[in-house]
Length: 304
Image 1: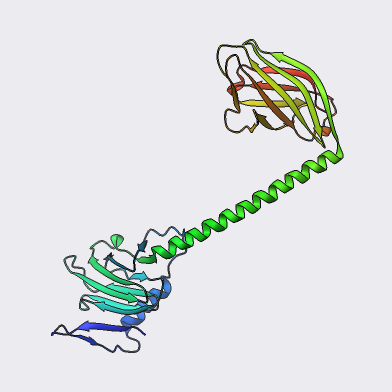
Image 2 (image 1 turned 180 degrees about the horizontal axis):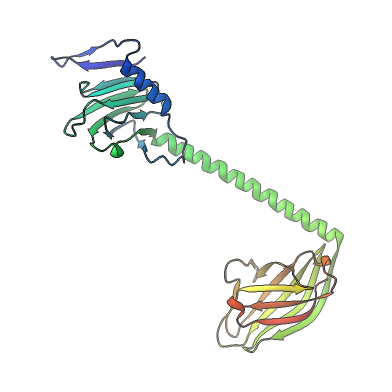
């Protein structure tokens, strides 16, 4: 049990024995039991977290007679020294120091020295006349310990992400292998069309892997302004079979899937999923900018 030191009239430090259970002590004990530190992310506005680096720090604590303030340490408290026990009741209970101001006079201040195995803290007590401005909980954490913990968490997250990525890549390779085992063929196509702005779309081939088809597309922009591809559809029998787009060797994402500069060409691959669910042999490819502008429709594309 920690020793509580006080000052007598000659300012000599002397140990003082306290009763086994006093009314105030019981009240403070109940306060500690009811006010354990909330779990991280609980969002309690009355809780403050203080990072201590190097083992020592001075911490300002706003208190009010209507509230019991609890200061939680990461390890048991071994000693406390209060400068004013007339106006402040201070107790150490396990890892916590509980404080109950006995005055509402904001001009009265005090300090409490708190010692644990590796921490030496000074709590500067300031009385506020607004209960809402007082602090209910202060959680003290060691900066070095938290930094080491964060480093271990980051390392573990990186390890798990790497393992998940490797597992996903293995799954993808296996899926491709199964698809190739089910069906694989390449068909040469000659479908092509253009819009009124002289953007030309050609479909030279289709590759069938399992139940899916990969449609090769070349976009030629003969207009005077960039063609910003925002939507690529594969329509057949009332269904949109599109399941992704590879633009210039990269997975296309975002509001703009890819841009073809004036006078330039770009290669893309449209992925059609589960093509056997449609009865028709051919589909219509629709490539357009945002809002359907500068649309190019290419019909008669054999995707099966």
